Length: 507
Ligand code: UN1
Image (tube, rainbow, N blue to C red):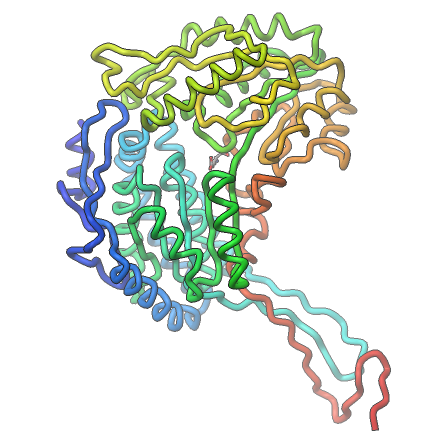
């Protein structure tokens, strides 16, 4: 099965991970091995970019941009449409590749590829809607308008947990906006990046612009080069808050733009009047989906006291029947964590939680045995903790759900907002008033706030991102496209006079 998927996607044992206007056949940055977190075995090798290879890619991306920016936006949209058509044809295999390389279950792997398709569809429509405003001038015979122009060769530095979709959010929008894109994927998921770049390359090559989708597989050193590279006006970065801080400092030191999607530490509030069955289903998917490795993963369940024992009991019993194993096998709900470092991180967080008064209600064990021989399989854990335990303020990228009791809505809101991060949040309630308070200015302080919907699994149509240490960026839908363009305000005088604004008389 494994072998077949890779073969069908055209992957050989060793692939180049560097693409400018063409694939660099033998990049000189050393070999990167992609491991299957299910078995621990190597599934492929990718050649990384050397500094020289990197320079070539960025120059070619920039050169391509100079021509691409002059192509009418609706025509640019057609190349994105072609790319999406090719992705549609390969959806099953691409979904399986995502599962294979980072360990999410097949249904979620395919869902991620659907998200790639969805953002492309959005971008195609957008290619005819890059609207600028016009505004009335205070001077006779004048008018004022805004235009949006392409920005340049922009970079997307992406994480392992969404190895396809987050690049696509950036790529599809940037491409219709007239930018070229330099992609530095996670070192844990280079094969997905190689295959998607090949597909994008074939669509954009057909359109005559093969350097719109470029790729530099490389280490963090390469990422740092990107942040300091003046040829790159925008760096979109998804990853940890710690690294995001460095990205922000480096990019803003040269007055570049950043689009940051950093840590999430998301909560769902469950009120006593909630439909507990819905809350239960949402909490389960939110906390254990993608083995707790989404930015939007539910990490804190804040439950109004009267329903806390009942909901916790139901959740513990649902956790008992979770099938943990091969992400490609039907029926599996939880695949492996991405690597052993993630397993260690989870163990450390559980230890700390225990020391801080936490009680592990279920899970937390590392699984062993033939079916789990990579050592990356863990039992998702539920930990009852006091709301003020410091561990609750940290994001651990693993399936640990902290259950915290709240006295009432005000207390629940305080807890929701008491962490440094601010990505996603939700409330389960049948009270319209509680829902509206949650959504109001004094409610959730997060970028995403849902009612009777979990914290994860956002659609592409809305702007995605969060506040505080999540970094403030907004990707994907709504008007996120504006970040990939530069705004120009034009004042045009069609009169035979030269009046000055603000009524100034001069000479
Ligand atoms: C991420 O985890 O970085 O809302 C992105 C979601 C997905 C995207 C997650 N649509 O869970």
